[in-house]
Length: 391
Image (tube, rainbow, N blue to C red):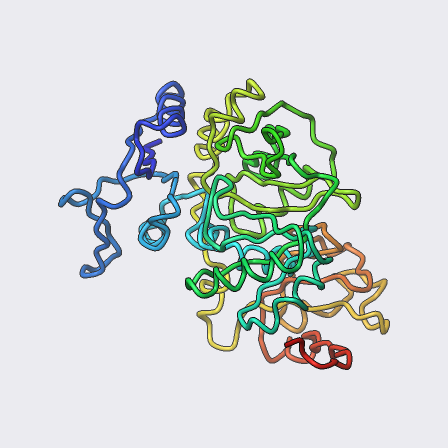
């Protein structure tokens, strides 16, 4: 395998560990500076140039895109995708995870547990927003930040309101998030590769700092994750569009709560805490997946006129409930079921004998007109009567 590692820090622990692991596995590997690429759209096919020369052929690219170069870095990854070069972390997945608001919107849409979170811009909405997440003390997070930077604890409403207003005046966008008291000073980092957690550690803060990041002096110990935590970590990475990720979770009284999904997780802390050769696991996973480059399914499948992808809901009115896919009549209507989502479980390529239940969600490709009357109607939201806004 010819592998390119995208990194602005070629001598960092993570970059060097990945390079040496690839060499030990018999692969050809280069660490390439993300900002030295040029995206070429002038020819018959998408292309890339590096340091002024046309880029050599690569089988896979392993992106480690820093927050400061997210826009250009994801553009480079996207160009590799257009060239059918495999990447475990898609350009969309990196963008999704880098924007904390967008990431939480995706997690909420897929019913992944997370601390209560809200985002406002009008100062009159600040106090109601704090109340919606459970009141003070409250966590305030900058939308862009890493290693615990830009994460603050406001002990009371007055301080929280003043902090948020000050940050908004300086053009900073912030999230307002529930303070989970029972996990203060600790969190769990689960390292996901593919569809499994390959290592996990519990991080503990130093002193009375509520942030447990190792870069802020925290300590770490290896742990064996409860199955619910492992499943949450894998699902969080997958819905984000990532196959290599560090998923940070709080251990709460109501189960795992995801704080962040990191698309470029560091290897140093997790390898030292667990003793697991995580770099080699990543390289082996990439090697096994190079034949399956990242595809935009909706883009590829929607090019046929009148055909597309849609999600259909099995309603509880009896039309499909209790029937098998083979007896559902979907095949006769030129509709193919790609996956079935039942709760948080996804069943790929279900057989004709699969029995449907109420509230199953079917991801389908087929004739759009045939699917139109089966698409679930939008729910009518019950809006509570609002009182006067605070001044």
